[in-house]
Length: 155
Image (cartoon, rainbow, N blue to C red; front, side, top):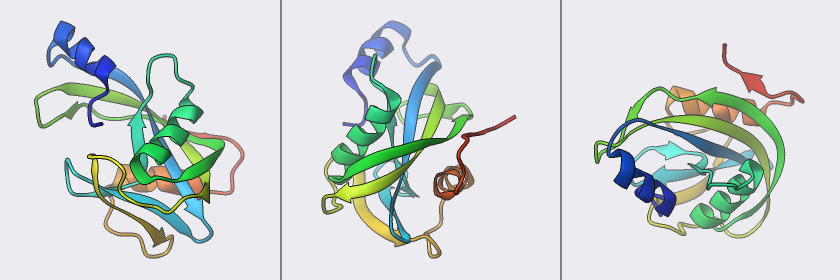
């Protein structure tokens, strides 16, 4: 579902004004491959992403999004990075800034497939042969694939 119901309700109150939204990115690894989705809204490839529902634990949101978007069960292994997006203007005119929590994740089960209306394709990509990705997504993927213990922060 592209716009969560709670955001629809918020938009009735605030219109297109900028919203600060918590979000997650799940960098899902299976051996030497990572899971990417081809987004409907911009036609670009990206890791699994989504908005955290009110009261939802962020790691559980990452697991939920992987299942909803790609039909796969994952383990959420660690927080890999924390960052804020620049101001985004959505195609409908809504403004938003996203606090992104990027998680390093491991595939557990399930055949990757399109499971929602947010994506046109879902597939595994070799880590050394990724498609053209936006720089901020490459940063998230790099953090998710890194063999680090601590999360990365932007300053």
